[in-house]
Image (cartoon, rainbow, N blue to C red; front, side, top):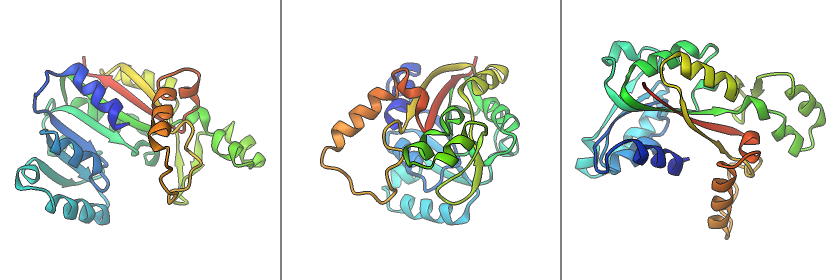
Length: 233
């Protein structure tokens, strides 16, 4: 997914431009730090105090120049208008957040307002159109049949959360002034891998296969996650 995001950034902004990035739901700060290392000014938003502590520790280990490019704000992302002026960012990331938001439209509209004209909105969501894949591949046939008729599921943390469909989000993005520009599938072949699985010897081939499938129909449509990129008009 990082490669997909970089591809969209390179395609939209002049090479070498230092972008203003808002990372909503920054978690441990992996993506924020990666972008700060690339020279961008990053504001990370996170509500979980444990995650913030981990992110701060990781940031403290970075050189001073990188530390100076990262700001962390404690928030759930729904009050961006309180913290920032409209049009303050060139790129807004919202990765792995929407599944925890019961009614995401207001959040997305707020994030779109944070974008400068031509800015990029990057979303990573659970694919509602492929919820039956995980239980099906695991041989859970009762769970598979249930998954066909719902947009909710239990995640690996044991929490009941929701998924988003491509068509629905396409309509939402158009309605908030950041219409869909590109989309990808994420975790087409590897969704059932254990979180603590060892890195395989042929990891480069695995990543190449995932990258190819994430761009190719019909494979990307059954990915566990969708990566959508909208552009502010």
